[in-house]
Length: 187
Image (cartoon, rainbow, N blue to C red):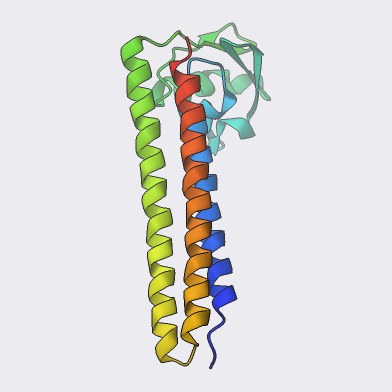
């Protein structure tokens, strides 16, 4: 059975692309001092006996850069939503007026900004490791493929392609991290 180097490369590229998407999601959840509904992605609300994502039981809006406005679809959920936010890692105390819940996004201290930037850097580094591991796995598969009859020049070309793809994704990670760091450090 012949090994299709293009298929191996395509599969690796898909895996690297998924890693970038994951990083993008993780960075979006890091609070940068601006109101962003994504910081509530991990909040789960008790709803009919199950834990449901907040976005599935309420609308979340940003009327201004420092406020999140949560409007429950059922008024009876307002206490549950408030409790879920208090018990989450969001770290903001909700204000409830009986109709809507407001989250005032406090300005970040310099120390907190540095911590968040460090957290973003760790996420970026973790994604780089994932990309490098994928490249290494592919190169191992390609080297083994030579023993199974794939010509050496085809294997070398495939290695070059995977290196170029790797480099492209590493640059993308650096861009995402730089943008997030700038967003976090901008007062």
